[in-house]
Length: 159
Image (cartoon, rainbow, N blue to C red):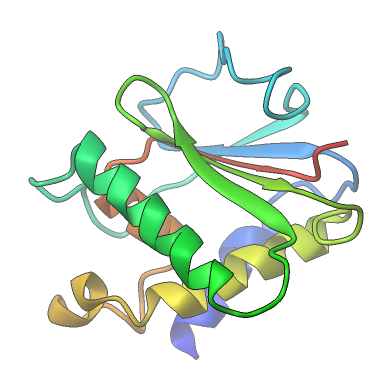
């Protein structure tokens, strides 16, 4: 419950506008020159900085991030109904996590995008990485992304 509350507090700081792409970055990320904007998602209308509760793990590399995304996609597909958004990694080191709605509805408002992140946080709580380190009830999905070495998370309704 504390994890969900922490995530909601973080997300309340995001801009409250619908029909936009929100990019959440770590402080080290340069917002300029995002070559994926305009191809995988509309040019972002807002950027938010996220200060993670922990650093990237030493083992964080491209292979780990790609395996994470692959595992996440497999788990989403097991639900038995169409997944309303695509999750993928881009960048030469797969350092950018991108979530784009595949249909109208799932992320048409900022509140729905927040709900997607909240669901991803619930899924992340089950991962051994968080459980083994005793942070499964404190770290959010965004913290997990930083642990894995992602430097940018983009959420888009795809419009």
